[in-house]
Image 1 (cartoon, rainbow, N blue to C red):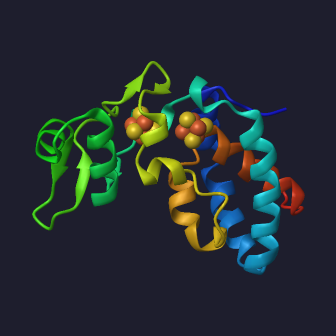
Image 2 (cartoon, rainbow, N blue to C red):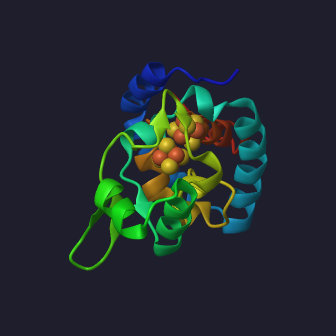
Length: 167
Ligand code: SF4
Ligand code: SF4
């Protein structure tokens, strides 16, 4: 049974901080390929069972990167000039890095993305459990463990599948 209640997950994550640190250590005894294979399998099942449009928590709580290609594609979709798009929706660092200038994201309507087909590349990738190298991204994955039900359930499934001892 998957846990999808955001409040329950947030509270559980607080209580599981020491356990998760131990689990990260535990994973260092395994090879990337073994861990990735298990994560891919779990992610396929969990992602298919969780409806992101009933959640939207990443869109409500994360700073979203905007690449040059993303900005061009979405401004074209919205029928705006790049200049106006950046003025309305983007904050630029002195080094030229772009992020959406509001949290929650401007394009979130209820729990749904209003520009889903044209959403930013980082949105398409998140929570990145389909990508190889899970063990190399433990810091960012666990940073989002308390906010993303997909991550939470995949990690909890992984603990069981790998025989990690839980209190
Ligand atoms: S563009 Fe869409 S998917 Fe990306 S953060 Fe905004 S609302 Fe969410
Ligand atoms: S990716 Fe995670 S946090 Fe974002 S909407 Fe889906 S389940 Fe929620």
